[in-house]
Length: 235
Length: 108
Image (cartoon, rainbow over all chains, first blue to last red; front, side, top):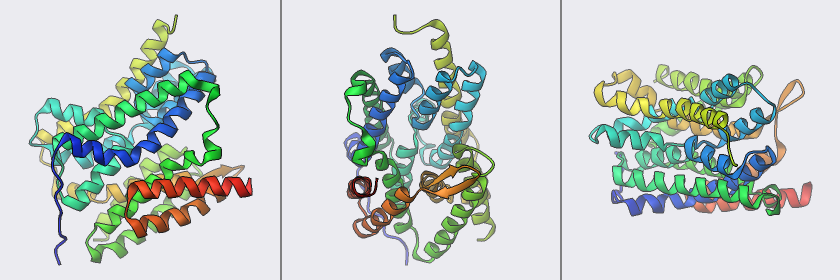
């Protein structure tokens, strides 16, 4: 009962295509970020640079909050580091599939890795057990350019944009993570699915408890380390 | 007119601390073979991070307690059903957004 892998081509175009379903999430959150950033007194140039250089949704929102609150530079940088530290785990998960590529290309893959492209990439791994470099570039560059454009446009349009929340658009991201989770589970070997479901239950409980002691982004990181360790130990 | 040197340095600092965790594993894994137990551990990371992100969006702090955000919880039910049924990322995102819009329309 080996899993059947159906291979899609390793092309830039296929990467762009696989990125499309995530774009509603990028656009709505990006626009929302632009609006929030303008109200936090960031200029359009600063919004553009922040999305271009930091390229991480939650960190950018937190940056605005701290900047508005007049937090010291060290606090802003340290917080950004902690919020984005989960990328370390995501990169570590995806990197073994790219060892045949040059260092410079690997730096490229890593530089543009986000929660969303990570989610799409690990789903591809679950379905096909491999990743291609051209495909990854297509995925990454589509997501990156959409994000930077959405943030900047959000900043330009600012208060003229309708409230994304009343349209349910803030939920695009959560819905996407639910879908990626289901797609990953659906591609797992059948005998593993019950175990994974139990681990997801443990995750809910672990995260809930951790949230009493720490902010969400840190809880996500620590809960992931704990539950993955439980996973290996109960094999 | 649009930014200051201080702001630019702050942005570069934030960029650097975000970039390093992103790229170091890619460079490290190329030169070091990861032990089997680490590779097995990494197999759990996708399911763990994705479920953690889903739950994190659902929980919210309310005073001294962490509670479930009812809108996020109830929107998750049809979203999950559509995800299982269609196995489609785009359809699930649209269904999720529609569910949340309807919930807000009727109950807010």
